[in-house]
Image (tube, rainbow, N blue to C red; front, side, top):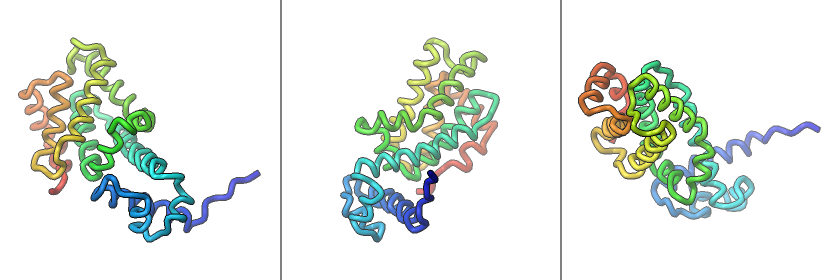
Length: 207
């Protein structure tokens, strides 16, 4: 038995709902299904044809966002673990800052389990990077690799949730914070970023 491909208008409606949800929730994180449907130019009934409830819609937003984060992690291929962490932090911050409300929503306690599953490839990348950094002496070794990787994740979560994305130097702060947690001194971070100015030059998000 063959599975029919979704109709074009159905696919477009679903994409429109997700776009409307991102825009609407950015203004009001508590916006109702009715408000999101109106923003998408669709009826509530049509929206429910795609998502069972508001939580299902939010989970889909988290899943689609996670795909972008996972792709970013896969795109970082620097051999130097310090450089890889700095570049990964900058690129992830840039993506998170553009949809900071969604990132914060994904990281809250209600959705953290779903987010963890969706971000499994990214978490594996951070774990592998942490082990590489410890093996070559780039990162601190007073903590076991799994503990350090978890600490990097938790600090990144706090930075995304608490830092004003539009503030000057936000990306710089995000990158330096994670480098510090990994064990680099502020002077070492200075030297690394000075040698690779492209990391931050293209990563700042306009206010």
